[in-house]
Image (cartoon, rainbow, N blue to C red):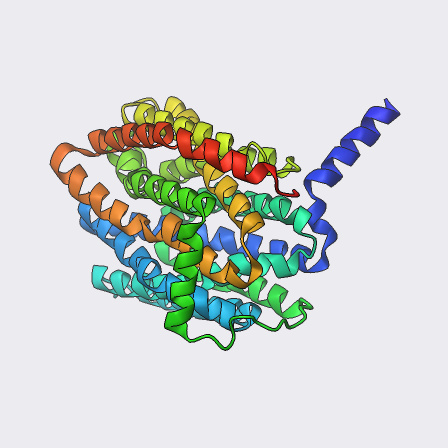
Length: 419
């Protein structure tokens, strides 16, 4: 009995081994609180737009305006992250995001907010995120000094992100029903204080940047050449971009499914998103328990297939309980393939190219999303939301099958790495 308890403690210690780093504990704690607020704002924003307009097309437009800056700016932001202090970039961008949340709260609570205000606020936040995402992703290697623990830290980051997706939407659904969307924006603004204070408490030694003296356009060209001449990096980025593009109807159209298809309210939307987050948490725990990137390419294929199948089934489920279960598997599949791709990239990329490659990662998983959002809004207005989601699910399955070949090549490439 005692030996079993020791083994369980040893297993747990292995799963959370990134917590042995003080800076990572601070980052995880602060970001975890902030992520809850971010998810609350995201749910409140989509519900506000749908309540004001009743248009699935405008849901796609708002999502597009919030993510399109990432597509156009993240490459430049990646060079910026390799040339400058990534830590300071993350601090400044979080201050800017906090300001955006407070402005959204003021406009909503005073009753003067319009769709065009939301477009402007979403666009501004998208520009902030274009610089924050690659800098934050690249900062992880400076927080977790031992590269062997990098995959564990990335998996725990995904756990934290989806823990917020489990908690945030549930709280948002209740608060929207009781007090309205503005309260969620206000809470999100204050939640940024957690990550800002955590960042300020960190002790990070300054590193000389190998790309510090490189001109931006030259650095940008170097990043593209490095990423797309390396078959493992290229295949991962392409697959991730396609899945991200095809997965957007799953999130963009969720207010429609919650209100008009399943006949619920904001609390129903919160439960649906929380179920997806719960599935994602289980997925990240399974990844955190791994001690090697070997086999992750096959995991990416399987996870993409699970996500596509879950989307197809959810599209036509009229029973709330069944829909909740299906979204659990959708959340599991989507986050496992994204986190696995992130882990492989972070492990194999050169440090002087890290910011640029992670900016391409941001372009793939977030930069392609706005185009998927527009497709979701436009296609759903023509053929219907259920059919749009089903078509996206079928396309995900096809892409997963196509990726089997590159995944085998990728697996051969990583076998020789020390992981």
